[in-house]
Image 1 (cartoon, rainbow, N blue to C red):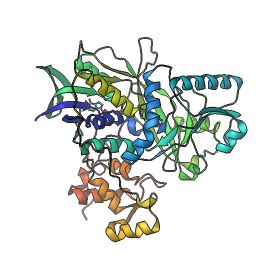
Image 2 (cartoon, protein in one colour; image 1 turned 180 degrees about the vertical axis):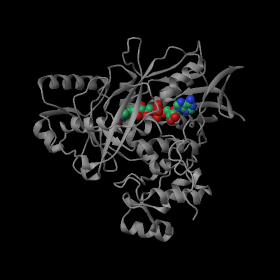
Image 3 (cartoon, rainbow, N blue to C red; image 1 turned 90 degrees about the vertical axis):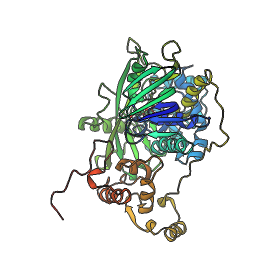
Image 4 (spheres, rainbow, N blue to C red; image 1 turned 90 degrees about the horizontal axis):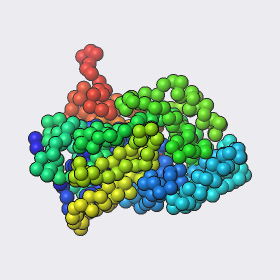
Length: 484
Ligand SMILES: Cc1cc2nc3c(=O)[nH]c(=O)nc-3n(C[C@H](O)[C@H](O)[C@H](O)COP(=O)(O)OP(=O)(O)OC[C@H]3O[C@@H](n4cnc5c(N)ncnc54)[C@H](O)[C@@H]3O)c2cc1C
């Protein structure tokens, strides 16, 4: 089938979804093509979830400028979109003279980048802030924070959809042609005729560049593995603790999550395989040992899960990592905004990245603002956050609030059903998990996975073998072992 839109965004991660939302402020028809059945299957759902301060990037770089902007707007974004963001600060911990010199350089770079709230603190102040951390002094970044990367991305996407952007999930852009001043994007059985293209395909951005005729983008993969620790440890860690960084790698850090867990990682392993997210056993031990030199609480018994993410870094011919590359090549691919190498701090900077990309379109096209754009994402209060009175009122208004599906995270049937009927039409198990936190607790889905699978069957009227875990090829059940 042929669809016509003013603009197509290829890639529905945090950057594509931020572009979709920012573009939906204008009078345009917008399509988002996403290869996966959901928007947080790749880097945007697989990271440290730290809102960076902007001190660790080269002076004058887009990374530095857009990170500082993103950090400043995060309180407003969190209010508008209803995702959790905590400006808890973070410390970069040192012990040697060389560490001190490096922290002083990092801080000076931060001030030049426009970062605020940076100071060097001594050991006493450090131990007041983070008890039991191993370090003689630190650089404190008061304005750094932590956020929910799943709901940030999902709510950007849902808000874009509520403002008229159309999401085409499980649609992989396979080839692109230019005909009569328009682009035709072929994606499975559907073709999209569009005037403008935004290439926000993350790890796939090099392939889309090639399809647009923009050759020569060299992208390498750097895989970061993580451990997730039980909530017992979240109580002991008020803010992220990092070692002294370089400008290209932050080092293995320990980070509290907005929901009370702790993540440990990432390491940085070069990879060509952008599809393999397994975490090898030796890496788990390496992460635990490395992070224990910073923070001594990490015991094997507290590890409840592992995960990994892959950074797509743009490098030059010599392999040196480059800045974000966001450009329109009028000579080769007019009306195509190409975004390459959107690695860290892409989560922090997603909305400024989107605005920068759209500014390139604005230099070349007249855009009319819509008066009816609504920036607010209507988010429901979580049952786990409600007071006893609120819970009683919720159960009285909908008895499904009285049925607990995930006991670890206290997620009710009412919340699961609401998530199943989400505005993007995401129907995977992880789609429910990222929207509700069901299956993220200590038992890691042992008790609730099958209840959620049955609710998906019931609400959507589908067969057990039609339920997918995360991707279109990840079946949960393949058939019956014996008839009932
Ligand atoms: C280990 C790690 C730690 C990080 N930590 C932080 C942090 O603490 N703070 C921070 O600010 N940033 C962090 N980042 C960076 C941040 O996560 C990324 O910069 C950001 O998520 C990139 O978003 P994206 O939308 O460009 O990419 P993605 O989320 O990868 O989205 C790209 C999307 O494009 C889709 N796609 C690809 N090819 C096609 C195609 N042909 N057709 C249709 N769709 C396609 C993919 O399926 C994917 O969903 C980290 C990243 C990693 C990997």
